[in-house]
Image (tube, rainbow over all chains, first blue to last red):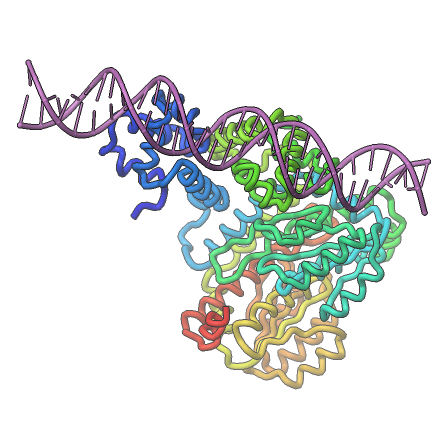
Length: 276
Length: 276
DNA sequence: GGAGCGCTGTATTTTATGTTACGTATTTTG
DNA sequence: CAAAATACGTAACATAAAATACAGCGCTCC
C-alpha cells in the first residue's frame, strides 16, 4: 500500500525516462519543498524543461499541477500536526498499553499548541484581563464549560467582577445587557461548534465586547468576532477530543494575570495574602 | 530579535486592524500551511477579502505575495532539515518569558504522574466505572470541581446513572441516601483539602461506596477511605497549583471507559453512533 | 452630534503561471 | 546501419492568480 507521494515516486522511478527521473530525484532530495514551488522553479532546479515536470506529475496520476501541489500540502499538514516526537521519541517504553499513546499525543498537543503561541500574545491577553477596565465574563460549550468554570474560579479570587455564565441559553443571553466595550468575554468553543455560542458571541461583539476565544486548530466561527484567538490541538487516540492543551493555556493565563496584578501591587492581592 | 515569520506576526498582531488580525490568527492557527496556498484560499479561510490578505503581508514587510510565500518556504525548509528544532518553541528559548517554564513544569508533572501510574491501575478503575453495577457520582473541591464536571459530561453520554454533585454542601449531602455499595464516587480534592469533602467521603465510605480519588502528591485525607487513589503532580512556577496532570488522567480514563464499553458492545454505544 | 480618517470589500486590470502544440534530437529495434 | 518510436525542449496560448483603483462604511475624535 502506498500512503505518501514520496513512496509513490520511489515506486515508479524505475520506469521513468531520464528527464522525469531527474525531476523525481530533485523532488526527493528536498522533499516536499521543491514540489510546492512553481513549475518553472521546479524545472530549473531539476535542470529540465517545464513540460517535463508536467509529464512527471501526470505520470504519478495527477490531473494537473495544482492537484499535485494540493496533495503535497495535505501530506505536509498531516505531518506537521503529529510532530516528530511520536516517531523518534523512545519515551514509550515497555508499557505499550493504552496509556502511553494517549499521554504522548497529549504532550505533543501541548508542545504544538504553545509553539503557535507567543509569549507576547499571552501577555497581551493577560494584560487585557488584568487591567480591569470592565467586567470579565466566561462561558464554554458542552464539554468546555468546565474550563470556563475553572478559569472563572481562579480569576474571581484575584479580581472583582468576574462572572461565569452558566445554565440555559436564555439566562446568559439576558446578561448581554450588562456587557459593553470595556468588558471582556472569554469563550471556550471546540467542534462541533455550538450555534448558540456563535450567536451569543456575535451579539456580544456587536455591543463592543472584547472576545478572547479558546478553540481548536480548525477555529470556531467565533474567531471572526474575537480580539484574541487561542488555537489548541485536540487530536488524541480516543473517541473524544482532548481539551488538555487548552486547559494548560488557561492555567498559564491565570498565572500570568496573577503575576501582573501582583506586580501592579493591587490592593486586593495584598489583602488576599494577609488572609492566608 | 525576530527570526521567524510567526514571531513577526505575533509581534505586530496587536497593531493590526480587525480584518488583518483575522488573517494573522488564521495563519498562526495552522502555520505555515495557509500561507502556502493562494491568496483566494487564504482569504476564504480567514473570512476576509483578498486585498486584506495582501495588505496583511505588506504590513509584515513583504513586497508582494510570492515573496512572502518564499520566506515561508525557506523557513519550512530549515525546519524540515533539522527536526530537533521543531519540538522546541524557538520563540521562547532560554529564560525568555514566563510561558516556557510553566509549560515545561506542566509536561514534567504529567510524565511524573504517569510514571507512578500503571496501566493496570487505570484499567482497573476504568473497568470499575464501565461495569455498571450501580450509579456513578462525581464531585470536586473549589478548584477541581470543573474537572468533575468535565468527566461527568463525558461519562453521562456513554452510560446512564452518572451524576455530578453540584451546589451547596447540604444538597449533595442528602444524595448520600441514594448511594450504596454498588456505586462509585469519584472525588477530586487537592490542597488545601476541603473539610466538607472529607466528611462527605467518610460518610459515603461508611455506606460502602467505592471511592476513586484524584488528589495531589501529598494525598488528601480522603485517601484513607478510597479504593483507588490517583496522585497527580501539581507544582508549577505560579501562585496556583496546577490541575493539568489530573485533567489528563481524567481524559485518559474517559477514553479507557469508552473503549471498554465499545469492546463490550454496549447497546448504548451503538445507539449513540447511529445518532451521530 | 458632525466631520474626517482609516479600514474593508467589489470590480477591474495586469501579471505570471500552467498548459498545449509542434519540431528536433536521441535512443531503440529490426 | 536505417527507420521508427519515444522523449525532450521551444514557443505560443489560455487561464488563473495577484495587484490596483475606487467606493462605501464604520469608527474615532472634536
